[in-house]
Image (cartoon, rainbow, N blue to C red; front, side, top):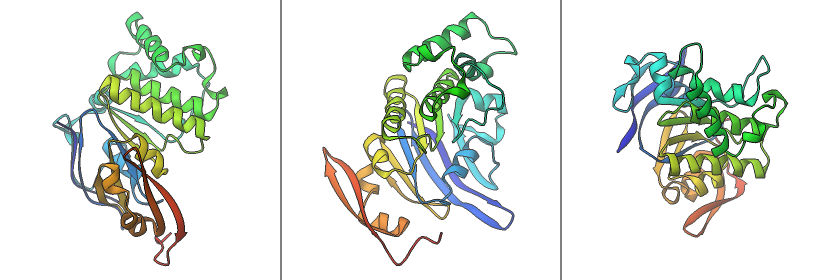
Length: 262
C-alpha cells in the first residue's frame, strides 16, 4: 500500500531549477534511502515533502491527502521531520526535547499521558538514562538519536530524516541506522532518509531512490539501483559492486573524466 505519493514535483529558486518532475511512490512500513551527489536535490525534496518549501508544481499525497490542502498542524500529525542539525538556541533537557514531539497532539500544556509517552519512547530507544541531561551537552550521535526519539513521540506514520549520519563515527552511524530500521519493523513506520553512504543505504534500506540534477534516475531494491553503471552515471566514479548475503556493497576505484559538475 502506498503511504506517500509524489507526482511531477518541481521546485526552484528564482531561475535555478532544483527538482525536476520528481515522481515516486513510497510504500507503507518501508525504509527508503535517498542517495545522490551533493546538490542532487535530496534535502530540498524532504523539505518540500514537509511543506518547509512549497513546490512550484506537482502534487504530494500523504495517506491519500494532498499536502496542498493540509494545515501545518495536520501535517505534523502525519509526518515527522528530523533535520541535519538541531539548531537549538536555548538549553533543554533530553526529556523536554522529546516532549516537544507531542506538540501536534496537545495545546500549550502537556498532560500525564504525554509524559508517559515520552518515557516510553526514551526506554524503547535505550536513552532513558539521559532524560535529565542537557541536550546541548551531548555528543552528535546522542543528539541525533534524541531527535529521532522526538520524531517517534510525534506519533506519525512517516518520518523524514535529512542525513542523520553525517559527521558521526562508525559506531554512531550504525546506531542511528539500527534505530530507524527498528522503528520501521516494529512500529510499522515509513522512513525516508537522505544519506551519503551507499553501503549503509544498501544494508538497511528496503528501497533506494538515486538522484542526480534534481531528478530520480533510478529507484528500486538496493541490488537494482547500486550498479556500476548507475554509480558511474550519477557520481562520475568507477566502482566495483560486490554482494554479501544478497546485499550489494560498493567499492569506489577512481574518478571518471565525465565528473558530476561540482
